[in-house]
Amino acid sequence: MKKIFLAITVSLLLTVTVQAQDQAASGYSPTSLYTLSWTTSIPMGNLNKFINTTSPAGGNFAGRYFLAKGLAVGFEFGWSNFYKKSPRMTFYGDDGTAITAIHYSYVFLVPWKVGAYYYFLPSGIADPYIGLSLGGDYMEEHILIQDFDIYDTQWGFTMSPEIGVLIKFGRYSHWGANVSAQYWFNTNSFSFTDVSSYSTMQGLNFNLGLTYMLR
Amino acid sequence: MKRKIKLLILLPALIFMMSCATYPGIDSRLAEDLVDLTKYDVNTNFTQFKTFSIVDSVSVIKNSKTGTRILTPDARALLNQIVGNMQVRGYTLVNHSTGKPDLGINVSVVEITNVNYYYPGWYWDYYGYYDPYYWGYPGYNYWYPYYPPAVTVYSSGTVIIDMMDLKNAPVHNNKLYVVWVAIIRGLLTGYHTTQDVLSNVDQCFTQTPQIKAN
Image 1: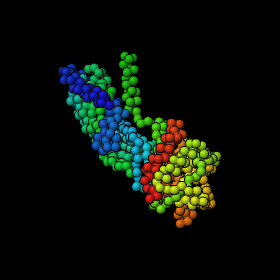
Image 2: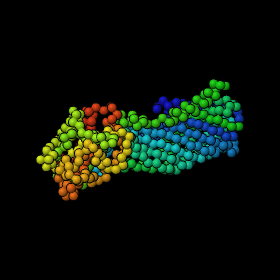
Image 3: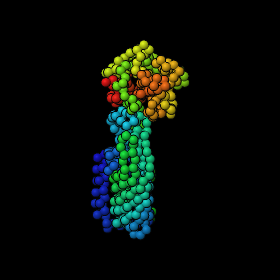
Image 4: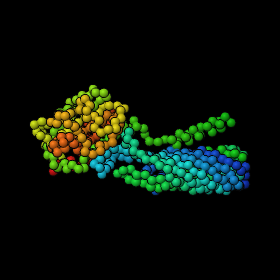
């Protein structure tokens, strides 16, 4: 996991260097773009209390449309799977129930968002951007014990600021790579009887994606 | 160009596969663990009981009405383990008919596969299960004085231990209250030894410290 984290950090640093070198080498400014990303997500806050393991099992699809030079609006939906295996332990209920088992905690998140973004160098080879997106978050929380599945699902509000960089594969290429980091929080809350309750989740997503740009 | 196109197809496919990796499936979860689920009646004071008796063989609950009773070395070991735990808690083993036990214990192994049950005590009238007649209450019923544990799928092989309050049956209109039920799940996966099952019997008692004669 640390390796993935390191790789993403190094990619981000490298792209900043590339951007500094390539400012003069301008290409075209895209009118719209679509990105499919692989998402690694670090649970924070209350989500971290439920599952404290980083998830490499996530993805994201985003579309962005440029309104004016550098300013874009867009949509995105993503998904993340968090899970953690917990050692054999005993849970006690206040109704006389006790259960001893290995269990898995699992969270499945699907954010649907719209956002606004500002690209600093739209015609550059490397184009850093910032953005803010908001929308709804579908969330499932499961505790899995053998073939038992105790779960809850709900929707909440979600918001996430984002920084990233878009790197064109060539000055006139339609294709590029997109590297970004998103902090997110949502208003989802859930509770499992006799275990704990959790409200408002936070996390940090790192996206590594392939982008197709239209002129 | 061809290589580029292949890469462009391969990359999203790889991203998709990486992003869908998730927790292990039911089969491997069943194989790695026996689950011990117990529930006792919170309104019962177990120190009022001093003696107990246990069935003399293990009921085997099967698909259809072809259940039976067994006293194989494994079944005997299972019964002995329960007796040992009860004695450690201060209860005295007595004969089920002549000793007037305060508590009766039924032991069953469910070998039904892929069948869901949504009502409590569904196995009580299956072939092989001991009738209340065995405990001196012909024509009467077993009864949960609480909502029983919500075990709905018995696809993996299960030991069920029912502990009945015989002492207060006349007060309960001759219903035999099941004051404790212990369920050990995951036997039929083929990964668990008799010793595993016996240590899980111990765990069922460990997680119910309320069962004690003094």
